[in-house]
Image: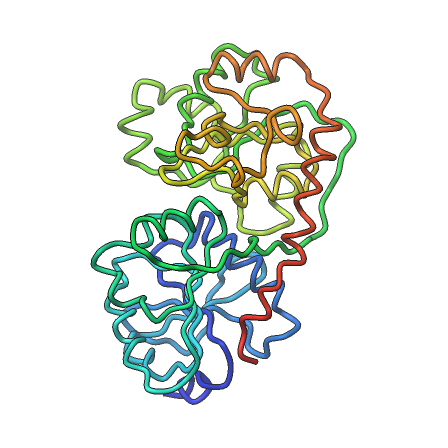
Length: 337
């Protein structure tokens, strides 16, 4: 197959995940844009049943190509940008390589590793992007990983002086606590309510938001196009970005919703458990309530905060201090060019 002859030339980015949205997709897009001047063939390879010669739209002005797992043994320098355990057969095929450098894998959260996966990643150089996840892998599995700040591509942003809305741009799923946002919206005038964007989990909408389905439909503005221009257009009207994520064995650090908010000069409203998780080492925490973010525990606090018309100037200025390290994060040092 034609592409197999080029798989040994440089590091190949492999996307071993079913879905093309969420934090893993954002990570891959920012990484690819950061590396665009260094890579001759700047696409990501997605493992499917059959290989294709055509390139498909990945979003954010980028492309991906479907390949079968039969091609994986030809790759000398694999870099797995996202892995889920349903792709274990692909991981096994990759481990049949006889040449090349040590493979790379990014671990996004604790669920990326399991007992069944563990034997097949012993020889991998693992990369984590939050200290809490790095610590979990070490304590639970005795796995060492290198910590790196998430890459961020500083695309042009629209910065408007007048902003009065709050928006949510995370996935609509169990760990994101969208139900708290809906409860707060019931206490707010419509012109102050949180506008909800993102890809919905049908199970979460049905089971958790079932009784609030009408309210969800009222405040839900759909999935936005995967482009930086669309994202900055949404955030240009936002004073606040609300992300109430609470993740098991995680917290304290950054997610892409946080970085997008900071880049677009929006003040973050986080769940206080992201900052004060009882299992979280305080040294892991990038965010401090009242310094570079706001924080709430419940709908009443969220509604009061939005209604209070807070001055966000210093919060945003302090949050922006975090961004430079992501823009300058040396991911290119990992590549075989």
